[in-house]
Structure formats: C-alpha cells, structure tokens
Length: 205
Image 1: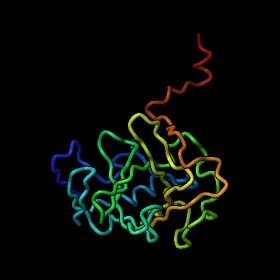
Image 2: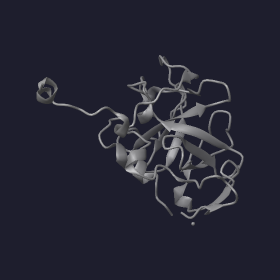
Image 3: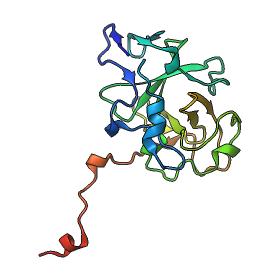
C-alpha cells in the first residue's frame, strides 16, 4: 500500500504494522496474530480519507465488508482499517465510500476489562450466521473521545470480523455487565510491564 499524503500530519497505513501493535484477538486466544495478519494484506483502489487528509492506494481485497452496515450507518458496508504512527493501539475504520466517516476502534485484546466479550457472541442480537467465531475471529469496539470528556468505549455493540473472509457484523450483546459508554481502560503493553523475577531471585539478599 502506498499512501499519498495531502498535508496530513502522519501517514496512515493498514493496521497493525508490527507485532508490538497487535490489535486483534481471537476468541479462543490460541493464535492471536493470525486473525490480524489475514486483515493486513498490503495490496492498489483509491480510498479518500478526510480524517487523514490523504488518498490511499488499496486493493479490493483489503476491504472489510459489513453487509448489514453499522449501527447508525446502515448504508455504509465497506471499510478499511488504518492506523496512525502516533496511535499504536487505536485504529480507524475508514469507510471506502464516505471520506468523512472514520470510526476510532480498539481491539478487545487491549482492553483491561477481561474476559471480553463476557457473553457468547453467537447469541448476540444481529449476529450473522455467515460469520463463524473461532481462531479467525477478530473483535473490536468503537471509541468515543471528546474534548474535556473521559474516553469511553461501547462494549455492548462490538464489531465482529471473520479475518479469513473479511466479513463483519456489529452485534448487540444481551445481558452483558458492561456499558455502551464504558470508561476506557487499557491493558499495559508488554514492554510496559514490570520485569518478572523468579522466586529464587526474589528471595536473594
């Protein structure tokens, strides 16, 4: 993919670009990288993004399709997932057909609230039978951040994507303990965790 900036502060790219920025999580936690990598086929389609003030060269195979649209955006069915250099854990779901529509999203893997989702996705409202959950499943939530307000995420209506078919659906989790405006709390990155010591090292004088 070759982004062509038109004055934007940073260049967007398909997300995530490195192991440190792993963004997706599979529901069974078996191989968390695989689902993300299938969404990251860097391949030339022109997608305009006013959020990033740029035009991206992508391929049709990079598109993530939501056949039923998203809540509040029923007509928007085609998106690509982008990131900015200065936001390693926040990606942007950019509409292919609407340059003005870009939603900030976070992988459920990065949330401090675990386990999440806390109810079975297959039983969620609006769940599409064509999307199977398993090692190819990626889950993300929409972030809301306004000036002077605490950032929140909608944990009641996550986005569920089959990274193999690049098909997704936004669902409503019934009986979830979480909220549509859950204060954002992130897990620390691996390189931010304190070093681990063995019992022998801990007991040494």
